[in-house]
Amino acid sequence: MTLRNELQKAIAGMSFELHYQPQIDTRSGLVIGSEALLRWPHAERGMISPLRFIPVAEDTGQIIPISQWVLDTACRHNRQLLDRGLARGAISVNISAVHFLRSNFIETVRRALDSSGLPANLLELEITESVLLKNAERAIYLLHELKKIGVGLALDDFGTGYSSLSYLKDLPIDKVKIDRSFVQELISDPRDAAITQGIISMAHHLDLKVVAEGVETPEQAAFLERNQCDAFQGFLYARPMPFAELEGYLQRQA
Ligand code: G
Ligand code: G
Ligand code: MN
Ligand code: NA
Image 1 (tube, helix red, strand yellow):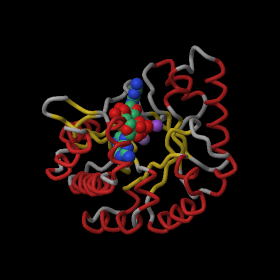
Image 2: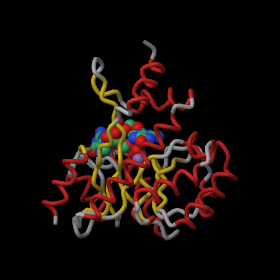
Image 3: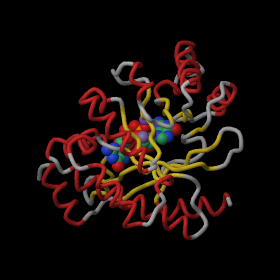
Image 4: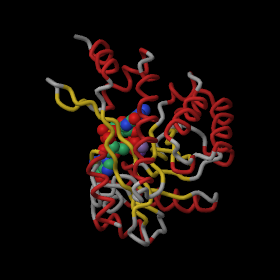
C-alpha cells in the first residue's frame, strides 16, 4: 500500500498521537509551555516520523484533516490540564505552510478554541519562514488576524530559512525558536556560537522571546543561559512524551 493510502486509513481512524515536549524557563527552571509533536504509530512500520509523512500529506491535501485534529487535540489537552490545575503556559502546535495558507485557517483556530474552551493565550502556533516565502503578504495578514484572537505566535527553525530578516520587524510574533542545528555545534564551533548570540541579541532588541531547541548538554545550557536565552527545549530536560506522561511530569513539578 502506498503511504498516501495508508495515511487515508490512519485519517479515517484518526490513529495519530500527540506527544509533548516541555519548555523550561532558563532562570527559574520552571515549565513555561510544551510543544505538541505529531506521532503516527504504524502496526508494521513502527512510529513513522512526521518528516516522512507530512510532506506526502501536504501534496495530497491530507494535511488539512490531520492539522485540524492536531489543533483540536492540543487545545483539548491543555484545557484538561487547566481544569486539573496543571496547565503551565501554552501548548504550541507546528503549523504546516500548506494548512496555514490554503484553508480557512483562522476559522479552524477559532473553532478549536471554542470547542475546547481553551483561553487563546494558552495556545501557541509555530510557523516557519517558509510561509513567508510562499506568500508573504497573506502570511503577514493572517498572523495579524491570529494576534487579534490572542494566540501566541512563534517563528520555528529560526535561522535556517531563506526569508529576509527585514520581515522580522513586520511580523506580530512573540518568540523565535533557534534551530537545533545551531545549538548542536555551539560549543565546538565558534561560528555557531556567534550566530546564536546574534539571534538572541537581535530578537531581544525586537522585543521577542528566544527559545533554544535541541539542548542536549549542560555546556550548551550554560552558554545559552550566559547569553540571556529565555527558555530551553531539549533532551537534557525532557524528551517528547505521551500526554498521560506529561500530566505526571507536570504533577511532579508542581
Ligand atoms: O518530533 P520530530 O523530530 O519527529 O518532528 C519532526 C518534524 O516534524 C519537526 O520539524 C516538527 O516541526 C514536525 N512536526 C511535528 N509535529 C507536527 C505537526 O503536528 N504538524 C506539522 N506540520 N509538523 C509537525
Ligand atoms: O522542527 P521542530 O523544531 O518543530 O522539531 C522539533 C524536533 O526536535 C522534534 O522532532 C523533537 O523530537 C526534536 N528534538 C527535541 N529536542 C531534541 C534534542 O535535544 N535533540 C534532538 N536531536 N532532537 C530533539
Ligand atoms: Mn517546532
Ligand atoms: Na525547530
